[in-house]
Amino acid sequence: MSNVQTLPGAFPLHEDKDFLTESEWVIFKLLCRPVSSFADSDAAELSAATGNQVTPERCDELIRITRIHQLAGLGSWISRILAQAGLSERDMLELSANIITDRVNRKLGYRLCNDATSRALAALQQQWINSNTAQQH
Image (cartoon, rainbow, N blue to C red):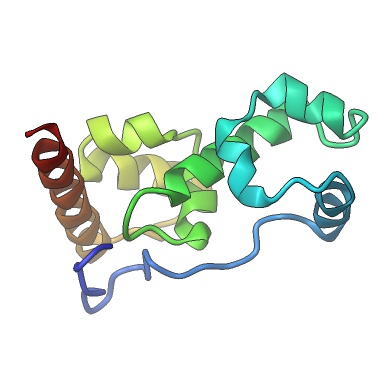
């Protein structure tokens, strides 16, 4: 659980919004595939399971959204935006917050992530590092 509060003017990193299209939701519901199971999936296999109704590229994006969303403090809304900017959960752990927010802004073509968002993301990254360090001891 994250204890980073939303900073004034920051994008609400914790908020959740649906990221599946209605048709994708129906397809995965019929397959009895909960969204949370995507994190452990392979894009090509997931696409094949849908009868190729969902492309491997889209399945890869869905997998990245789900994996990013598993990081404490990140909701599905920002997870979708991060994945659409080409980022992965590994990038979230290894790249600086400023690089991440710059990539998002460049991909979108406008400044969604401001300095307050970068600071909030950096605080989350520090929590993830501290959590991983604590788990290793």
